[in-house]
Image 1 (tube, rainbow, N blue to C red):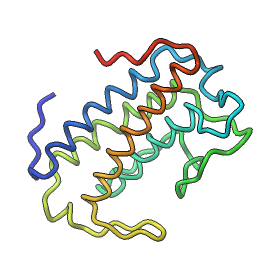
Image 2 (cartoon, one colour):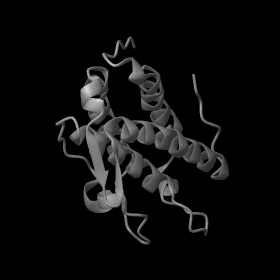
Image 3 (tube, rainbow, N blue to C red):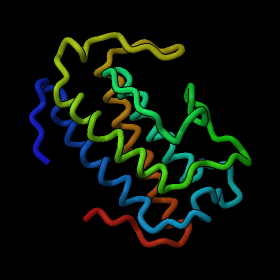
Image 4 (cartoon, helix red, strand yellow):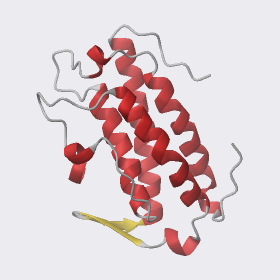
Length: 164
């Protein structure tokens, strides 16, 4: 996919964004629903929670650009809520649909973001930063979470993530 961002400071982040858009789907490929919420007798976040939290992050970031689409994450991830024991999370297929729904309009918004837009204040409870800093953090976190899902794949007996 060819991207030509207005803001040169976003170019590298947009390249990563596009990679993550593909990599999350690849990381989830073939994972059965019975394993999506398997925590293997640990307190670790399971695949469904990790996936939902990444998707929630994109939807939340999109709102900064005036994109307000509904997602299956609902209240489960509101205000950066952690994993909830014994909570049924949406199916991975529903999460994938959400990911594929939000990714194109958010990519367009990032591609067309001006430097002025990127310098806007962005606030979360206890945190003040610029929109550019939030975009950077979100993309960093996506990489981290996709890596966690890739590790879960191996721990649950699946083949490693296919990057091709």
